[in-house]
Image: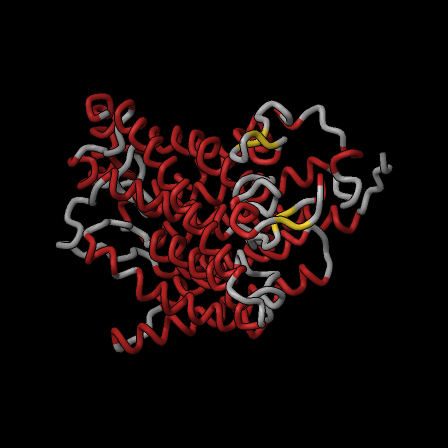
Length: 447
């Protein structure tokens, strides 16, 4: 067995990257918190913090094992292999990378946390907090971890010899060295994170139903400065997401950093152009949303495209997402904070555009249609798997715990009615205090 040699530079890089990705969840709380009405901002932010609390524990107990344990049927890893992240052999697991096992596991821990938090934006203002907490745990186990295994752990959506890509396009190599002749590309989570979260958000938005007054009453963001702050912090944290996925501080990380920057910039421009043509004005909310759309789209492609390709990918994705967010009104789906329009559509756009723009195998670089075909296959598979799992978990929780708060609570505002607090009460007025007291008195019957 090759001796384990600690690479302190790579280890420091991964620890820093993990911290950056962890920052993305509080950043999302700002982003989502600013987008909702003032009477629900605390609940919205609390949902992100709950995803962080639940996700960290579940990932430590069994999530990592399900995602990266020895393959079982191409769908999950051995859930007992790394139980509690104990009993691991650093020398056999990470001898080549020089990064301790717990550091790698910590970096991966931050991904399910932000993925679950993303889903909350589709069902803002109207769901029971306890149901959300249970959902966060179940979906991490059943929705995120299996998808991560299928894509990154050698499962059905990877480039292994037993994957869908190998079944369609054949394999290369022999014996234990055999791999798919054309491997899917998802560098940092286009399928695992964004398509997965976006599809889950779509299913839950339909299952939960529309907010009271949706489509008839204005439901404008209560604090656009919070939205802009959240978007800025998300962009900052995303460098850990993408550049950190290189595994060390090398040229691949540098390419991912540059591509993340220019794709996001181009997506802002793409979104603003659509706004100017369609609405005759450019908005700060649109710029912030365009930034997130670009970050989403470049995530799977960060190390596969050139900087010029990243600009094209970002501009296309920003424009497509800007056009997509209005479709919820046409279909009557109350995706409160555009999780579907930004994350599902952006994730699909970024994943599929790899088939055109990948510098080694893309169609526009002479690689033929094979890479594009593989990217379409894993996109459709991710949509199907995520939708099916989320529907099953959502229906179970709806039957056991219920999703919706009462009509009276929703009208009054979930912050006061469910959490007995308000975001911007600086006076402690008697009327507010009486409302809080009433909320406490009636909480039992409302639940």
